[in-house]
Amino acid sequence: MAIDIEGRLNEPTVGTRENRLGSITGYNGDLHDLVHQSRCGTLQNRERCFSQSSMCLSMCAIGQLQGIRDIAVIYHAPSGCCATAAGSNTLARQISGRIGAVYRSVLIGSDLDERDTVFGAVEAVRSIARKVYADYRPKAIFIASSCVTGVIGEDIDSLSSELMAELGVTVEPVHCEGFKSRIWASGFDVSDHAVVRAIVKPPKEKRNVVNFKNFYESERPQITAMFAELGVKPQFLYMNSTVEELEHLSESLATVCICGTLGTYLGNALEEKYGVPYVRTINPMGIAGFEAWFRELGRVIGKSAEAEAFLARERAKYLPQIEEVKKDLAGLRAVIAMGPGYTYEVARVLQELGMTVVWAAAWHYDYQYDNKEVPPALNHLRSHSPDNIKFSVADMQNFEVLNILHRYQPDIYFSRHPGSTVWAIKQGFAAMYVADEYLIFGYKGTLAFAKAVRDTVRNRSFEKNLAARVKLPYTDWWYAQQNQAMLKEVV
Ligand code: SF4
Image (cartoon, rainbow, N blue to C red):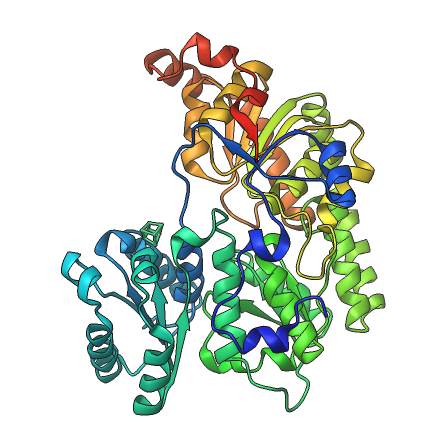
């Protein structure tokens, strides 16, 4: 059993990526070495002598759950931990507005203070849950923990069971203490675990639905039309999904995802527990990724002929245009730094477009997914990359990225996090914020992406003007340091 989902679902907590998958946040070397060390089991995490702050896994766990409509999340945490809640709530409202749905989910913080850390505040959470249920009638309540509640040992498991019996609605504990993992993607697994454990029901009948794990579903109309050609409907997760829809995930024909890092736990859990096939190809970015992904989906659901017909039609429309733009991108040198799912995929797409990836940094590294296999995108990059790529693993350590940029002087920098992109721009580099997970989706997205890269490297006035007026905190001494010096062996 890859996950041992039956055993695991008895527990309200799910192991961190470090413990479950052996994932790391510190490495410096190259692609070939990384894959080789992963395969022979010698890869070790390397610690830093200095670290910048990174991101909290609570944000990922709660952010995912907040996308579900008509639920409540009670975050048992100091008010500071809830800093991102307003943004997530606004985002979810806007995205549900796009499909004409009404978003009524709420996130309530328990506002832990110093007194609560001494005496505990489980009773306060009980009162909050009663009030939330009376006021909003949510279809499910998630009670989430934070660092403080983890440290003082608040028993949110018993509380959830008691509240469920009292209120007659699903109440599920969500163990997302920020300190337990450096890898914020562990938060995705925490939310998936809560959904599979508390919401998904055993199947009664098969439905012509494909589960689609993504973030913000910006390509919902395109994907809905594309899937209609295969005779199926997408069930986007979790943004805009309802509790009732989630209950039926076990009845779907397959599960796909936009990012392997995001989809691994849910996809593998549904496959293992309910036999819903999980499509494990490289992801649908760029030409090779889209074709591999769509073909495999077609095969899994018995619609290969329909999938091929669609691909042939779209290829004829978009490939000549992509080839034309590629002429302007050939030979451009790029540095990228993103979550690992996107690092491998975007590196591959840049190579497809004729560019050279001089350095790829991943915010963490899963050397295996929950099925115990090396991530397909990494395997593909290892076997198809024309060059060995310099590679590092750094959990949003921007100071390392700036060092790399200064040393390699690329034509363009790509990141999926604005807090990283802006620093490259201040250094004077052309930079692209690959924010939308569908930015490079399919042939159409690949064409749009290629054009955006061309525009970004051609119009340089913004970075040049900004860099000329910004004084960065980095000294020549820092820029002269090699990355290897930043990491020490774990003892
Ligand atoms: S790391 Fe801990 S204290 Fe910081 S935001 Fe996350 S849960 Fe709160």
